[in-house]
Structures are given as C-alpha cells and as structure tokens.
Length: 417
Ligand code: C6P
Image 1: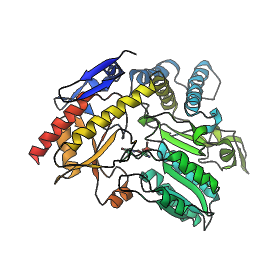
Image 2: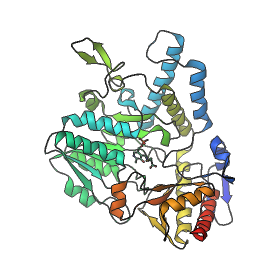
Image 3: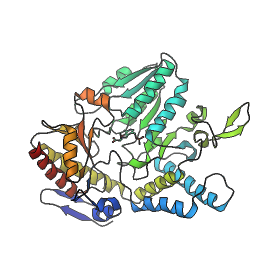
Image 4: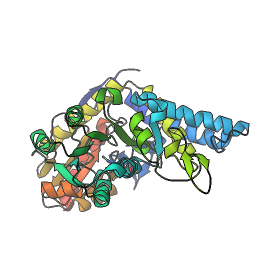
C-alpha cells in the first residue's frame, strides 16, 4: 500500500493509506449530487459498496444463479460452494466455527431470533440487562420477551460523556440476571463500550451475553473467542456488504439447546403430519430459501476488508475524528454530543437554535449526507434531554476534503438559520 500525505488548507492529516485509490474502489462516491461533489457521512446508517462486492453479486446472478443445498446440478453445486464459502469467511472473520454462523436478514432479525428462541426459556422473576445506549433493535425484542415470560428489563445507566456507568451495571447484576444484551459501539454517539468487562461480569453471575456488533465490525476486528460472548450479531450492509443479509454468531451448545426460529424447508431433518425433527446447525435456524446473493456479497465484503491494512484504516478513521472534533470545538454554536474516550469516528452534534432536521436538509442541499433525528435510540435521547442530533459518521473512504466540505457547508447553514 503506498503512503500518501493529504493536506488541505485547513486540515493536516497524514495517512499511511492511499485514500484516493481506496475511494476509487467505491463507484458511488465519484458522483455529484445536487450539483455538488457527494460527501457521504452517513456510514452509520449504511456503508457504500466496493467494486469487489458489486462484482461478486453480479457474478452470482450471471454465472450460477440457482438454489443452494439442492445438489441436483452444476449450478446448484456452484451456488452452494460460494454461499457456504461466504459462511466460512464470516466464521474466520469472527474466529468462530462454521456451524455457529446463522444467516439472518440483519442485526434486527438476529436479536429477535435470540430473544424468541433463547428467550423461550425465560420465566417470571428473571432479569435481562441492556444499556441506555441501545438501538431500538436491542430494546424492543427484549421488551417482547419480557411480556411473554414475565421477566424484567433493567437498564445500565449513562455517564455525562456518553460512557456506560459500570458501577451502575454492577449494581444491576445478580442471581436473577439471565441475559446481558449490550451494544459494542453506540450508533448515536460512537461510544465503544467495555464489552469484555461487561461479558466477564455477566458470566460471573451465570448470565448469557449478546453483543450488538452492528456498529463495531466495520471499525475494528472482533474475536468472539477472546470476548467470550455467547451471541454476536451484525448486519452486512454496515460492513461494505449488501442489505438484507446479517449474521448471528451463537455458541454451539446454546444453539443446539434452543428451539428453532421459523419453520419450513431446510430447517428440518424429517417431516410427517404428526411431527418434525430439526436439521443440524446452522440450518436448523435457516428456514426457506436464503438470501444467497446477499451472503455471497457479504463474503466478498469481508474478503475485501481482509485485504486492507486494518490498523492503518483504524488510525485513518481516528485521525478524521480528531480533525473533525478540533474543527467542531472551534465552531461557534456547535455542541458535541458524546465525547467518551476511544469512541469510533462518529460525530453527533447540535447547532445552537437550529432543529437537527433543518440542518440535515441544508447540508443535503450542499451535497453533504448526514443522518438527523433520534437514530432509533429514543430512550438515549430522552436520557440526554434532547429530541435528536445531527450525526456525521465516517468510514475508511472518507478523507480530509470531506471534513473541509462539511464545515464549509455548516458555515453556510449558520447564515441560513
Ligand atoms: N442503525 C443507524 O443509522 P439493521 O437495521 O437490522 O441492519 O440494524 C439495526 C441496528 C442495530 N443496532 C445498532 C447499534 C445499529 O446501529 C443498527 C442500525 C442504523 O444508526 C439504522 S437505524
């Protein structure tokens, strides 16, 4: 990888990456929108896709479109090889076993699966712990599990900078704690939670752990053995892969013990009108024809990521966040929301006297894509006492010029409002 230094008039980021050629692998980024160069800072919502991913999906449909595991002909064998190859790639990516990787539609479905299937063993008096930082996807399925079982939901409180209050967490843990389900990275603030510590302490009271990795996997490597978590979930589309495909990693013994999720083809071993028996892992949790192209696309996304220097990507993102934060601190009327140390490259903020949605629209007029609102974290926003924020979320292909254009656009927004 070549080394390049990117300097602009008011930014000074030295990167060990050739960002220009990395960006060139993402065709969508070279376009103009509303007559302006696209500045894509909505990576928390979804990341853009490199040519390698687009080509893998295209190749599947051109070369071997067929159903998988039906084995009757060449195309099916080839599709199955690519599909299962992608599963193996996800397993290696997380340091898991192949049969511990279940394909889902995304993080939301993965959490619902665990809340329904593992949650089937909950009973009145049991407790589930989540945190104030959670996305609705890691709140609502547990509320539904509590309503079904009579279990109670407990919430880890927040500190002023957007970190979790670990003393508050310890006070919630106890003999009744059955499940601890916490995010690895906050989508709204970028806080990286002390997840290894959270898991260790949950294990000490015999609780099962689920980690919402939706916002983590694109920023740093994850090893489920080192974390010692029971479940780890993420979405393909936030990891440079396609929408409609996601991953549930589950510890084999737990997956074996859980009842299935949806019923139908593929998830069975035998069916009679009296009873059915279940297929082996991972197929027991994969009823119906899966998202074959999506899985192959996600496999290609991980393959692409694994060819990059991840340490260099992480320091590039950290440099972008540092530069954006310095600019924000010097920007009159701008208030940063969430300043936990070690956060990923997510900058949530407010502008004095301006509604976040208005700011978002005015940025969009200038070609700058951000997300505004509650970011599907309404309880977090309530806790912070705000209706929402403006969120600029960075990824590996963002460069100092994107920061320059964001702040130039914000200067204009100030004059409009
Ligand atoms: N957050 C965001 O703009 P799905 O929709 O299933 O792919 O992911 C849900 C989800 C779960 N957990 C976290 C931490 C998330 O960030 C998300 C998705 C997007 O922040 C869309 S709301």
